[in-house]
Amino acid sequence: MSTPHLSVQLYSVREALENDQEGALARLAGLGLRDVEVFNFVHRAQELSEALGRHGLSARTGHANFLSPELAREHGATVHSLDETFAAAEQLGLELVIDPFVPAARWGDEQEIARTAALLNEAAGVAANHGLRVGYHNHSQEFVHTINGTNAFDLFVSRLNPDVCLEIDIYWAAAGGGDVVALLRRLGPRVQALHVKDGPIIDDPFSSGVPFDPARTGQVAPGQGEVPLDAALAAAPDAKFAIIEFDHYDGDIFEGIGAAVSYLNQKGIR
Image (cartoon, rainbow, N blue to C red):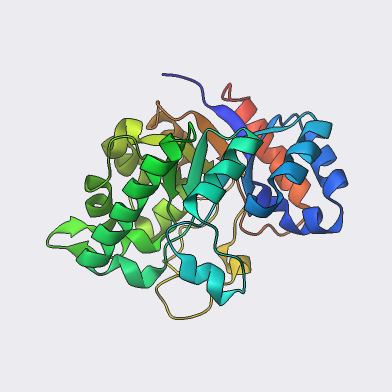
């Protein structure tokens, strides 16, 4: 069993970054963090690389939406090509580029699941030309449907090429009462990264038709909620990264991250 590297998803401190990027990065470094997971990085790779370097931080994983360009269009954002995305990832020194979200409507249809897997496999080929690997990050909508007796997420994974990785968000995989420990054992070495977060076991909010409100997730510092984090970490011995993330936190987000750092440090994850 290898010990994963400690990291934090910068999305957790998105508001602090917008207000004072240098101050936010300094506070993360002050908590003992040395690695971060970046997001929305393609258009600002050089700037972000320099900012991280000023604070002794590096990024080895990053989120980029390359499976659902319609999401970027909906928000008026630029749709980047795979080569543009992976060139920016190279510039930052990433190892793994992860798509963070495929809409709920695509997980109830077998053809759409197959198409999503094919797109990810195609991206893996392009990423390899840049010395990178790709992966997928789950929420809860992937686990809602069953197709011919097989869970939609398992069906998706069965169609992925062997070089495609998974980043399992433990909190979201447990939503709706899913057995995240069994899931991690089933996926085995596919799982190269974990999002470590805690809170109540809630129902899937992404298939409800109601706009998602992160404030309703009830997320708390790891070890303070209902998610079986200890067992989940033990069930993913091949994971290279243990990444702290909060979609929302009531209170000082840096205090929440500090508590998460302490929780993981106690397990030898640094």
